[in-house]
Length: 233
Image (cartoon, rainbow, N blue to C red):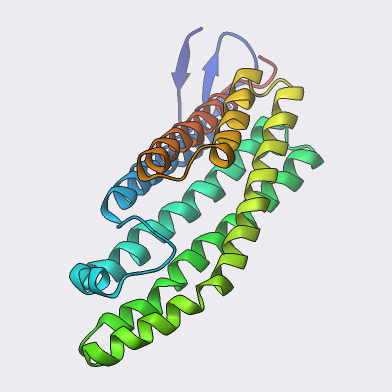
């Protein structure tokens, strides 16, 4: 198959021309997804392991970088990942109502998840900032905030559950309409099962997270190919 690009469309030997704008959008979305995956990998490497509470001394040691990394990298990278993946999954599902429903649930739950995990860090950043409170008070406030973390856990757990169900539903539907190979669905199911069955030790968590990044990018790649495929090809 050969392709030529003009001002309005890219043509192929089979099917209708592919609009240049659609190619550009597809490329932009895939690029954003890859950059988000890289950003999340960097963020996970930088962020101290979560052990059920946020440590005051660790937060003090991170300084202003703690807020910047969460607001400028971690939160946005999660949001971009979920929204862009939702768009690609909708395309892979032929934009039919099951795909649109699952994609919408993924995007909305993903945005709430990204907002919540970013918002939960703000009180701890203030408590660790000597310009806001003295260290003694900050340590006490941090303990109090840690006691209130279960309130955030409800939101994080709830949105995570919606994300998992939405992604699996969207992937299965995409496979049914032949937009996605079943082996990719099998990879998704394996990742989810491993998350529930394997111990949550740091090496396991890091390893699973890396596989998740690969899965997101893989979904993006198939979605990208679907978008640039000539109509009728």
